[in-house]
Length: 424
View 1: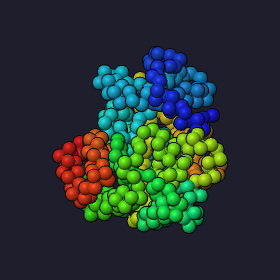
View 2: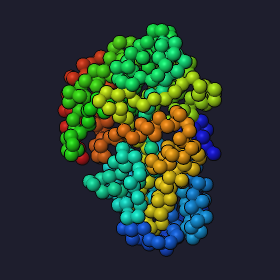
View 3: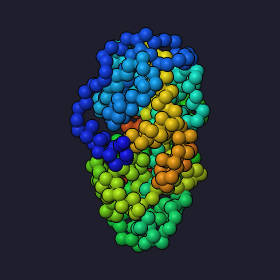
């Protein structure tokens, strides 16, 4: 199995190595039904082509052998795609009408490619998925995908250094977080109290826990307008930037891959906010025994304790020649029991809430925090212009954290930019 630490090594290898397509057949023809309004009875049959990125693309060919054993007349060709080539490959395939039957799809790409996806048929029960990830599958009120695995952000903190500073429990509130970071920096002698994102790709998205937990929203209720300079948004970034202006966080922190993990293990920066794959990276760098020196905790609360909802969905393309079998594979991959096995194989967190009751996850204290956090998450709006707005926001965040620009002024300018870009 690929546990989180091994998964990190695999992801690193994939980033350095160009992947080629693999599978049992290049024939995408099928004898299966093309009517996907409901799932048909009986086994899946015919040929399926599946595209999956990164480590998932490497693990999936062997993993679906169980599905094939139960459906011996289906032939599945899994094509691994490097993440850095995937977006262009999807664009090209959609334009040329050469899409696969089904694919793994990043949640922030749903709006961009959504016109090519088939609606989710009757027979696929989505009632037990976490709400935040499930929201990323809906376009104009229609579900065009199913959450496969989920991602969110929680607080990681060094328990040994926190105890030196007099903290035996995680911070409950945003005010507690600031005080705990300052206390550890002063009393445990760390270089900084916490690692927070200040610049770089998706840095704004990585800071949104502060805004969402303060009652802010990126759009109005019906998602027709951007709302990036509201009082709640300004207040949250006055709080966020205070970590940098007060010297508790480093605006010039090394952003090279592995730097934050190294600082955390070394104890020079004792807190950070990140996703579940960080556990594998820390185990790889610090060794298994390092797990006794840190804990995870939910995002400290303002009005709420709200974090980012991410991950990947499974989609079936409208041009699929075998949509019925494709949806049957989607249904199997998103069953709770299957998702526990997928976690064992990859470290990907289940999107089905029922899967979190399995002892594999329920008995791991660090993991259960992620399950609890997933009950209160928000995803960026499913709109074709989010990528542009997010890029503009990354620049604005850097001006606030690195250059010290006033959040009210910076966010007012961001609002103007976002309004000009529109909602798509």
